[in-house]
Image 1 (cartoon, one colour):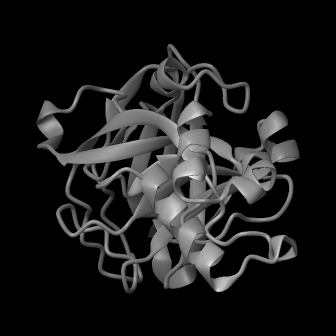
Image 2 (tube, helix red, strand yellow):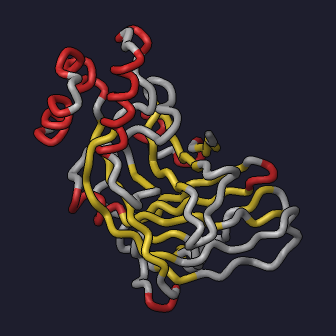
Length: 238
């Protein structure tokens, strides 16, 4: 956390250094580069386009409605930039969400599973789905902090501004998406893990309300048991 310590000193927050370090979480910032889906390697981390799914596995539905595909994350690539015991060492996480009904699914595909790129099913979707334009993700390890400091720190107005500057400095320019760490708006409850956050990016068509975020989460005990079906998605907007 050397970079964090340097920023704390530079922003005159040394009196709160211990508190800030105690809530800092490792994260992987994701930079999206719009790329034709045909040029994105199978099982690569990406947003939009068509997902790579097990050949005999049905696209996730809610009732008669196919859930729109949001993104997929290659967990082996995550481990290369940020070794962590919080997630499986390998495999693929795929994220789906039907916004009108606020229904989400997270699929975990084990490594060495035969996959194929599956196109969006035809069906009786209750909302018109304009697919997200495909973008390959570059992964960069970093540090994240809660968007708002703990009220018990009793920061003054000046310190609040400095804390806001600190969170901004830690978040690289153009990294609208992330894996693990704190979300951009709400950090969630104790025992919850941020699996993936997809931010608003006009270049690829991910506009969630007024520049909001989709945050896919799971409880630690469900993750430990492989109960991916219990994951959910929060929508946050300023």
